[in-house]
Image 1 (tube, rainbow, N blue to C red):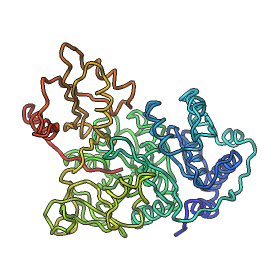
Image 2: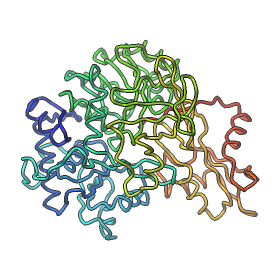
Image 3: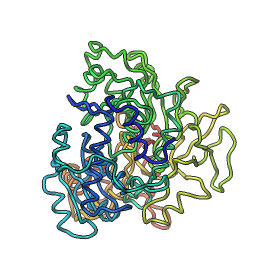
Image 4: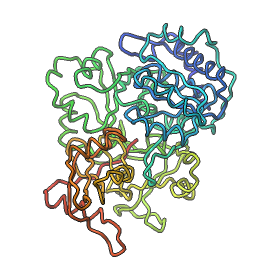
Length: 516
């Protein structure tokens, strides 16, 4: 195994030079071209005083430029900080400030936002605005003749490669420090026997997410395969892309499988190239699972993981027994167990917290020793998820210790939303919870007590939230209530709110699995 991502790309460019690594619209970028363009990106950053260990943020949609930048940053010895492009400016600014980003590569879709961030000073000393999706020749021309040879910066396996921001117990995103070793170990752990150099992975998930980075980018890169990049998932484009590019695999969340299953005219496309699909982030309903496999003749492999574990921690085996509803078996080199509150391992069938360890477990949270100490204990990553293991070693999700809401695979923490709601002049109290939803797994709901004499509407609250929060975080369900249930000490009882609402409305409960 190569020791750094830089070495991996160089090795694969040498071995598969003229083979197409990346398909994007009508573009085909070979391994050699991908290596050279990302090298030029690295040289440009070094020329602009980006030093080893500096953080460089990326705010780009799915496009070749994201990948050139992502790997170019690592080749410069710096640390990539992908930003969710659904974030509003205040949320982006939090990431830039918290990471101490020295550089920013931002898409033209954001207008002069990069310039505005730069003008505020702070750690940011260089930014570059890119036109998204330009032809590879134009991408090279825009690099002003920077060398196409490897940059002089040297990295070692333990060097940080990225900061992946994930919601956590503080209510604001925390940056999980993932090293070169984390990424390469995780890819090496789950690809054997599954991914081959003949595979073409269709990437429909956002590249700022570790799932897209690991499963649909690094996995084919690692084995000499190819990836097909879509700007975003749209039902209209999915089947034509899968058929035209002869994709063999893709990764998606369960809600997308339900959408695909019900799309008309799918039978008119030749989907015979599709071998398998990877599913995570929420439980796959059994009827959807069975109907999808029957219709599209491709295996669905359900799995589990989180950003702090790079991506994949367990998966149902390709060549063994698959248990529907299970998150599968731990991948090789990834010990997992179920523990009680006292840290002792529990026997099969008993529910406790899922913990894991391995070379894919993050280094820690960036500049947050307290959160790191609470999550990494005695060499084990504490996931905050509850589950159990059966007699065959398969793991099952039972619930969550944390209050995290997972909507369509996106982690949402209630406190962040509540802090916005409490700034509303008409709101006295607010509690945000996740309610079960057949389409999205969970939906964000806000229970609100208005100040005496004040009035508001659901439309007003949602519009207010959208000024400060990404759309997927904004509550879709608003309930105005006279009071919120509390404990004797005055703490709002969110569990009671949820239980009472589910019972009163006869909602079907489910416990989404957590996969990054």
